[in-house]
Image (cartoon, rainbow, N blue to C red; front, side, top):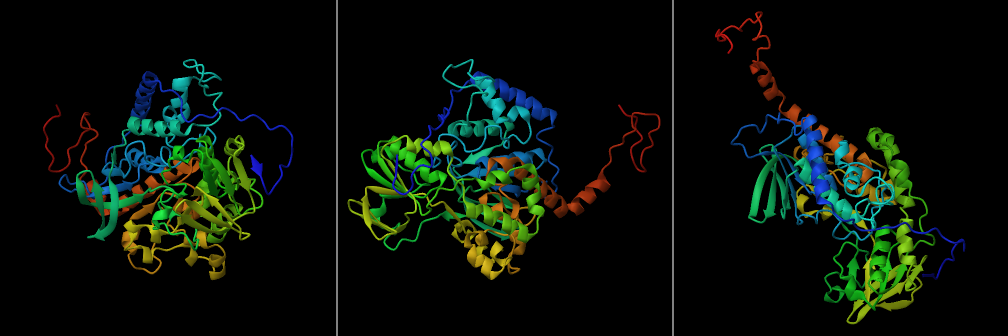
Length: 522
């Protein structure tokens, strides 16, 4: 690796990179045995809880209590949490095919997760559903797997393989009985007669369903869209850009880049991941970043303990703004293993302090104008520029976006101008619901609950990152349970009045209520 703008701070020998693998061998008999154990544990927890919701209890009422849109890590965990709370009349949908939900098998290109292997979340506190239980059942607790000498056991595992995590999530879903409808896309949200309507496109065509609540668990881009830099000569409608200009979220045939010279823009983890994939496919890569020095400290790690994750939402707006604008400004460094993955290739060049002014697709490549005005030619470019948070980019919510409250309405104009991205985050209620900034569509927005990266400014990273997932899904489910009960309070009152289950009927002290049958119990 060469770095044209910064010399290494030390020539001392660097530590070896631990073994990193995408996935480990599957041991299906072990997983089946563990699933049986987990189901026994769930049964001991009275899972799934009986349905207690009254508003849609009529057998002929097709209205859902909750529609969960998105069945990745966050959506399926939200569905699991609802079932644990006795909310049974739900649907969980995802536009992707089974196994392609979320980024793990699609545009995520790291070898392993960034998070420590010990983290929990999708298990919702059930030990036999944890990743550790899943991994140990197949590969043992020690340094080396007793079933496969080439695979580390739990003690020897460095970090969780990306495909292992995908397979683990699917196993949790199946074991917990969270039913997911794949190939079903949300087209449009509306409202009528006090409930939401959702127009869905699925294998059987288009349908419209009625639902009291919608959880939008649409992933990292679910509160906006991929961020495309505004370069004067670049339009993604330009046919010359096809196959030459990519975002890290795009499907990329890296094998087709073999022998080519690729430029990558960005200094984040995804930029390095894509650079590594191109290098491993046989391309030469020049990576560029405006920063003169890579971010060195992941400040978000200091915001991942239970006190922060549970207590952040109770802070006043000023403190919330201070915490997360600071974390965003500091930015997250790429994991050191990911940087070393690129450094291992002589064909890798990192140019820090060198941003881009323009990108122009050509018939035979791409011309990139650097910050100093010089122009370099590449065969293709990959933009590691992340995702915007801007609900105006979500077509499903088009009728509501002009009314959605954002953080920009809750800080001074100067603060919003200085921090435009945090200012675009939706300003959510305590139950993760969208809110109205102008009083319009307030009732419908109160039934729309955002459970992805867009919830971060209001609730911390409870709907996007593994450390907060269990806390977030539990809080969300309990909040919806409270809402549904309050909405049905009069029905529950009537049910209370009608409740007639004599406790002492099997004793000599039984006294039948007036008008009750006096027949002896059998």
